[in-house]
Structure formats: C-alpha cells, structure tokens
Length: 372
Image (cartoon, rainbow, N blue to C red; front, top):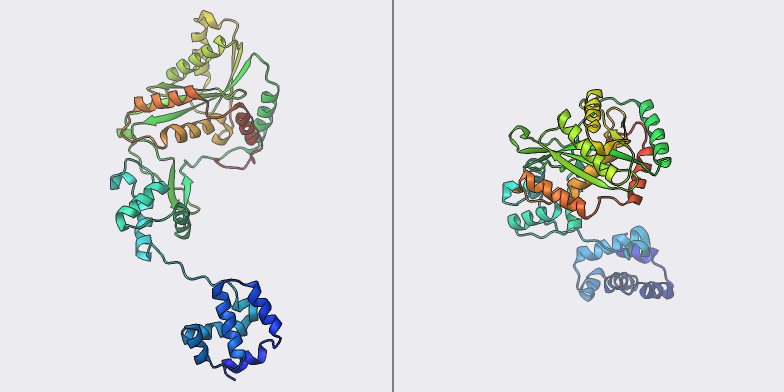
C-alpha cells in the first residue's frame, strides 16, 4: 500500500473535521499542508497536488509522512528551519582559543578582559559578522564556557568555628549599642595593571590568571565598612606591613571618635600581621593622642580560611566592579586610588538595608560553603 492509499485509509471522512482544522490554523503555511492532504484524500494524485501547491515531491512526501505518523497534530505542528550559523565550527574553535588564552589588549582594545561588547566588536572586525548578546552567550554555553570568578584555593576550614562566628555576628549586630561601631576591615592590592577578577573558562574549572606582580607598580588599599550604616572608607598605603595597618586603624578610629562613637570593634581576618604586636603598637599610638581618651578599641577575627565571612571582602568586590572593572589600563596606581575614593565619597557601595541583608546572608551561609 503506497502513501496515497494509506492516507485515504486513515484520514477522517467527515468534512467538518477538515474545516475545523482550517479555521483553527490561519497561517498560510499550515493551510497549504492541510489542503494538500485533503486533495489526496479526495482522489488527486501526488503529482497533481505538487503542481497545484507549487511544491517539490520530497516536500509533499514529508507532509504525508507527518500526517501518517501523527495525524493533524503532527502535520500542522510548527516547522522550525535550522538556524543559519554565523560562526562556523572553525570560527568557534578560534573564538574559544581567543577567550581562554588571549586578552582584548592583544587585538588593540583598551581593556584586559573580554566582555560581550568587546567580543562582538572583535567578531565584527574579524569576520564582518553581527551577533546579539543573547546569541553570543548561547554560543559560549554551547562551547562549554562560563563567566567565572578567579580566586585562590583556600585551606581547610573549621566548621564549628564558622558556626560559632555566625551566631556571635548575629547577636553583636542585633545588640550593638548606639555609641559602638562594628567595622569590618580588609586589605586589597591596587596595581598599575588591573587584576582580572573574572575570566572565561571551561565549565566547572577555576580560571588560572597569569601574573607579573613583581614588575607592577603597586599600592595597598585598606577598606573599612561599618556594619550598621554601610559607611565605607578606604585608605591607601605603600605597603601592608604592621606599621601601615596601625596607621590606617588609627585614622579610622579618629574618624569614628569625631562622629561621637566611644567604642570601636574591628572585624579582621586571620592575616599574620593582625596579631597582638600590632594591637599593642596601636594602643601605644592611641595613648599619645589626646582625642582618643576614654575610647575603647576591640578586635575580633573571622574564622580561618573563611573570606566569605568577612563583609569587607564583599565591599572590595563591589569597589573593583564599580570603580576598576571598566577603567582604562593606562591609568596609574594613583589615578586608580583617586577614582575609588571619589566614588566612595559620592555614595557607599551598599545602603544600610543592603548591608543588613549582607550580614544576614553571612549568618545563613552553610558552614561548609566556599568562597562566594
């Protein structure tokens, strides 16, 4: 039994069913398929139908097979044509290599990390092709790439210490006295060549970023964020030695004393320079300042190998993103420092409500979680 005979044997004989499908689908392409099958059922040959519909024999055979396979539902289903690929397999291989092993600076762009607009500009310049941002990210996903944050591999943590810290942080913020400031502090490096915080890498991998830190002009930033108001300040020092940390802490204390605070509690990480010798040197310096009489200063440390538990780490991330992510690589260290200070003077990275949500987020982190 050929296709024509099989179609006539399975097709409904009720004309109203055919008319119902005709009214249900107003698209011309679907009505052509429906009219072709109806003509075959009425006794016309496939050659005659091809001439009437101006289609090739293979097209009609495809419609007939769809109708035999699933009736009206399969015959009238939307037909999706294969998308014409702007990037051939060879082009994709080259694009993948460029994203993983080269920087925009290698191609004359004034940037060090690939963003969607830069990739679009590179494709336009290389192949005179245009791709939307959504399609570009689809291609990246198809190539097995994702935008990941490059970070260090931290050492073993202590779950019990993390859980105790979360509970203590929750109570300290909730029970903070009006004259007490809880200030989280952390250091970050500011270099003439910016660090690439994000990079395209294969999925489920951590991108390894090349570094020439020994040859870079460098400064050290000390970012402090107050955990109730969100007030964020930054001070820059040539080094991150103990004496530099002492100077920064003294400056922060003076600021809060001028605002009327009498108790300042610093939340620090477990960096070796944040030791008792540093605290003793700070107390000695404060004793020489008449303005700090009657002011108490305390220190509190985050759990070991737990940068995600220090709110200042999140603020450093926001500062890098807002102030340095799109900064021209030709900017000097001093210009970068002034750019950060100018942005922070205009507004803190996070509002008091957002800081409250951040503290809540840290208190709810699983004790086994990694960085961010």
